[in-house]
Each structure stands twice: as structure tokens, then as C-alpha cells.
Image (cartoon, rainbow, N blue to C red):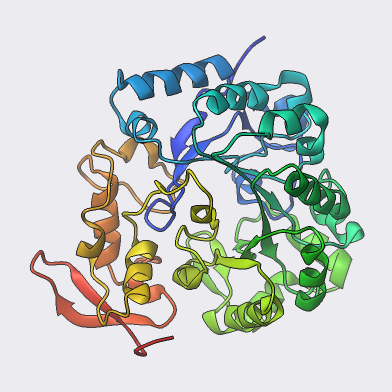
Length: 408
């Protein structure tokens, strides 16, 4: 068997605002073929014959070496300190090719023996089969995130051609719950005029027994090779790009982003719909992350045992800490004592990354500091909801921010 995917372990370029930047992908390319997927549009493949497979034994060896601290580098540092790994950030680990190669199964089988904290993202119903249920059972430091954009099977087939019927995914959630396996739901992306009515959606997911939902609006790709426009028109008869522009969407990097006011309407509707339930809410739209029920960005994994060690020295958490503590100022030094890696992050920064390489080799925190102090940066604190620059500098020369109101 030839293993052609050589970079299964990495650090996402979103580390400056994400609590789960450590990434694992056993496959490069994804056969599910979601028309809105950024990874697919920017180089991923939908044909199974083009999908690359990583060597599971090499991944396992990397973890073993990291635990022993035999290698240097950021990945080894994350492993040594048992930072949770996000499994499936770029491709679905349980897509159809997994039935042939079983690479995801083999890696998880080992990680379970050391109870390494893993957060799986998937929209495959393979996880509900007996083989995988047995694997997941009694794996304490495991959380499975199941992604759904719509409960309408016709619309789902158009936008996610090789994804299971949404009802099957809801059934998987119920099955995982029944087997005491940690599971959350990601309503990601929420697509204007395609995703379900919010009250209806919540009524349906309550039936599964789910305890946490992550929510994020569609970031519309600017790439011309995206066919989401055609698929959206086949559902609504409208242009999604025209709708976004009419609503005041702005270009952020390589995506059209809805304005804060538009997102806030839907977030408030969802919060109202969840009122009185025991379902917590994670907000994945970056500018609202700090208003999530729990602190680890949108995932909510910090509600589960074994995930206390998520990655904290990042911008969203600095804002979150100030918000929770009712502090008048938002300061970079509030996260300076959190564990961070010491190696260079530059090898993970390429031409398609959301932040640019700096001239000299730098650590993750060096990049975060640069973004923190650049008011033009897309993810500077001033770009978060209800946050602004306080026109003050701390003793280290870092900008200080504040909430526009005393309390949101």
C-alpha cells in the first residue's frame, strides 16, 4: 500500500483565535464534496481516486516520539503537553475511503490506549456502525462533532452530494448519546435562505439529546472555481453573491463575510430558541466567539473531562477572560502565562495561509502579538463585536482594548 499524504499533523493558521489549532488529517482531499468547503475549493479533491492517504503507523510513531520528547518542534511540544488534537479539520476522517484503508481507525485505536484528547469533526454515518461504536466506547478524552448545514435532504444532496441524509446524522447523534460517547453538533455553515428555520431546527435537534451546538454563518469563497453559486440558484433561484453584497458583506482575506449586524440577528434568534433547554451554544463566527457559553472557541469541548488543556494563549481567549471577569480593559498580558510552544511556526505558514510569514522565524505568540497590535488585521481585537481600541499602550508596548459598553 502506498501512502502519499506526508503532512497529516499540522498547526492551523487560525491559531491566533482558535482553542484547537493542533490538526490531524489521515486523508488529503474529501469525497463528501461539500460545495461550500474552503479546503475543497482551495485544492481538495472530491474524486476518491485522487485522495491521498497518510501512513497511520507514521502518525502513531510521531505521537510516541512526542510523548518521549525525542523530537523538537511545535508538533512534538503539543503532543508532549497533551494539547487536544482536532481530527478532520481539512478532510472528513470517516469518508468512504476509510472503509478501504481504515487509517483513521488505526490511529484512534492507538490514541485511545493513551487516552489522548481528540476532537473529531465529521458528517459521515460510518461512526454509527458497530466497529466504530466499539472503538469510541470508553474513550474518555474523545469528543465527536457532527456537522449539519440543513435538515432538508434535497438541499443537502445538492450542497453536500456525498453526505448521508441529515436524518441519519441525527440518528448517529442519538446513538452516540445512548452509548455515553461525547458528541456535539455543528450547525456549520448556516446558509441564508437554505438552512432551516431556526426554531424548527432546534426542535428537531432537542430530540437527539444533544448538549452543545456550534453555530457559524457561511463564509462565501471569492474563488471563481467555486460552484456554490450554481447550486444555491438551483435551490433558491437567487444569486448568493448578490444576497451577500446587498446585505453589506465585506471581503475578509479570501472570503465574503456577512456584517456583524446581520449575524447578530440570527445568533439572537438561536439564543432565544435555546432558552429553557440544556443545550449550550458555541459561536464560531470569530467576532462573537467570546460570547459562547464555554471558553474553548465554538467547540465547547472544555465542558468535557480531559479537555482542560486546550490552547489558551490566543486573542479570543484574552477577550473572553476580560469579559468573564468584568474587566474594563482587554490586555495581551492576560494570556502571557498560559502554556505556549517555543518553536518556530513559520513552516506551517504558506501562501494560502490567512496570515503572512514575517521576516524572521517566529513563535506562535510572535504572530499573535503582531496581529494584536495591527489595527488593520482581520482578527485584531477591535474587529470583535463590541470591542474597540482604548488608545492606550501597556508597559510592553502592546495596545490595550476595551468593550464599547461596560457589559454586553
